[in-house]
Length: 364
Image (cartoon, rainbow, N blue to C red; front, side, top):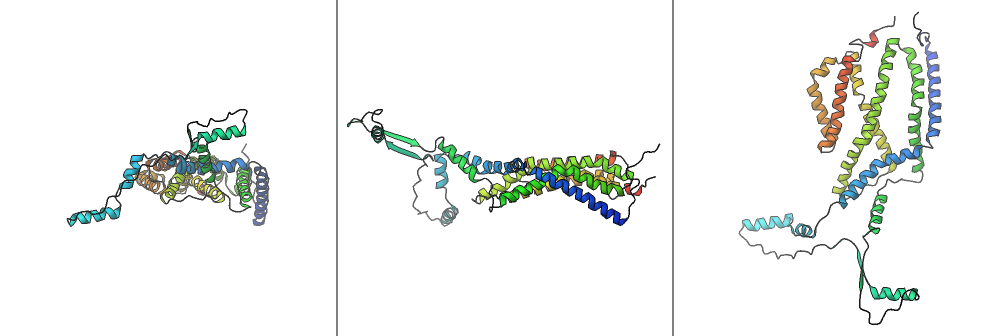
C-alpha cells in the first residue's frame, strides 16, 4: 500500500490559486488580529522589559561609574596646578632662548572640601524654639548657656539616596506627544500578537505553498524549518542579552566625552531594539544559507572548508569593526559567527541529501 500524500490531488488553475491565496491570507490576518487584541492586555510587561537594557546602561554609565570615581584633595591640587598647553609652549620657548620665566607663580588652590552640603545651626536657637513650641516637654534655656553648634550634612542618607533616585528617574525614556504612549502600546501589541499567532500564520502560508511542492521538496522544509526557527530565536536572544548592553554602554560613553546627556525617546528606542534584534535573528540563518548554496551547487561544501582561513579573517575583521574597542565584545560577536560557520559546514556534509539538487528531483 502506497502512502497517500496530502497534496497529491492539489492541481488547480491560476484563478483557483489566487482564490486559495486570498482565503489563507484572510485566515492568517484574522488570527493575527485576534492575537493582537489578546496581546494588548499583556504588552505592558514586554514594554517594561524592553526598557531594562537602556535603563541599566544609563545608570551604569552616567551614575554608578561617576559615583565610583573619587579624587583626593592632593590629586585635585596637582591637576589644577599642571601647566596648560600654552604655558608649556611659552616655558619651552623661553628656555630655548635662555630667558627666565618671569611669569608670577599662581598660588595653588586649596583642596576641595567635602562635596556634602553642610549646615551649622546654633543649638541655643533650637532649644528656645522647642521650648516655645512645647513648654511642658522642653524646659527654658538658661541665660548663660554656652554656645553649641549643630552641624547637619544634607548629603547623608536618606537625602543622598533621594538625589541618586532622582537622577535615575530623570534618565528614564520619555514620550514625545500625548498619543505616543498609546501608539507604542499598539505597535508592541501588533508585534506580540504576531509572535503569538505565528504558528497559525505560518500554517496558513504553508497550506498554500506546499500544494505547489513535490514530496522531496517538502521534506527539506520539514527538516530545516524547526532549525531555522531555533536559529532565529537564538540570534534575537543573543542580540538582546549580549550585544545591546555592550552597544549602549559604548555609545553612551561618547555622551560623557562630549559632556551631554542623551534624551531617550521610548518610541525610537523600542523600534531600534526590534530592528537590531530582527537583523541578528536573520544573520543567524548563516548555516541554512550555506546549505542552500551547497544544495543548488552554487558554492560546493569543499570550498567552505578550503577557504576557512579567509572566513575566519573576514569574521574577525567584521567583529572588530562592528563592536566597541575592547576584546570582550569582539569575542562576543566573533565566537558565535565562527561556531555557526562550522555548523554550516557540518550541515552541508552530514545534513542528508548529499550533493543532490532538490529542484532537479521529480516525484515518482
